[in-house]
Amino acid sequence: MGPRRGPPIPAVFSARLKGDENLFYSTHSFETVILEKDGAIGYKPEPAWYIARCLGVHDLVIKGGTVVDPSQSLHKRSDVAVLRGQIEALEADIPADQGRRVVDAQGCIVTPGLIDLHVHVYPGVSHFGINPDVHCLARGVTTVVDAGSSGADTFDGLRRYVIDVSATRVYAFLNISSMGMVSPQIGELEDIRFASVERAIEVCERNRDIIQGVKVRLSRVIVGQNGLLPLQLAKRVSEAVRMPLMVHVGATPEPLEQILAELKKGDIMTHCFHGGQYGILDKQGFVLEKAHDAVTRGVIFDVGHGKGSFSFDVAEKALAQGMVPGTISSDLHRYNVFGPVYDLATTMSKFLLLGLPLDEVVAKAASTPASLLGMSDKIGTMRRGAIADISIFNLEEGSFRFDDTMGKTRYSQQRLSPTCVIKGGKPFASSLPVSI
Ligand SMILES: [Zn+2]
Image (cartoon, rainbow, N blue to C red; front, side):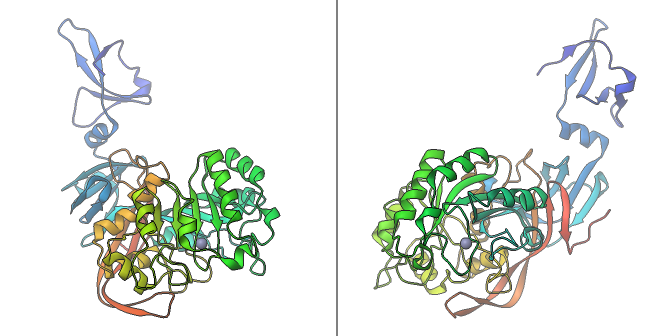
């Protein structure tokens, strides 16, 4: 925009900014006042970050950390400035006295707020449920996807009693079973009448701001005698509402190849490194041809660690054959939050141990899930103007024990340990010094 001409800004709406005699700020816009040659007054709009710099005020400055933001291929020492809930600037040196609040992140890793694509956060209704603010947000995860805890009959409660009142940003994949994951005694798809295509479509359509996909769990104990029929029904919903399908595999009634054949670009197979029957490896330990084909056509292989779905041996063999997961998620729930999962950072640490570089691990828990949610410009990134969701970690050195779900233990010299989390520009939990 070029300068516009007009009358002076009424004093009641404006204030002269420090340091620049010609710079005014009004409640509606930021403008530089230009005295033109003919004596007229012009106004040149300025971006908010520029004005804030002239004012010497950022809401928050994070000092001294190393920013790892794969969305911009960034891995460098940088300060971060936040203004009005958005990322305002990444620069080598932003003076601490320009921040209303300052976080001392010396020696820490600073990343976009993590996004966990697979958790269960409907406590009191789903027996798997945990509190997202305690176990996700306080552990560096600013956005989560509840993966099928609720179905068409129970989603309204998830929305009202969890999503609307949590500090964590919560999205949902709707279970094709209308009850969701309510009962530990009976699989949610043993009675196929729970898989109502019409009801699921109706609830997805009504809640497009929150529901981002359709979930189906295909283990034998969940589908009973119904084989792959629940998959077909979930697929009908996914196609009707044009949302991805997330399929839970492991101990399924049919081989993995038959399930993969139903998945298209953008669909997600969770529990990709489970160690049970019908996994991604054949009997000789080679990755199935059909699994490579699925990844090539754009199916996302998601970790979904969980209580019974992550094998170090399977992951190691798969990675050695170039089968890298698309997303790293925890499948955090009531039965694994006190081990072996603990939190998403612990699952990420396991992939550092398996040899993935830090930048790649962060990408799979930030920028990639953000793009699957269609929110790459807002979350999972520290680009200027993005929502100021930021996680700060210590990359600890020492000897740390990690367990998979097959009884195998490994030790690592490194561990990602969450030390501070900022959601929408506000510090939520921190063991680092934050000035007030
Ligand atoms: Zn799950």
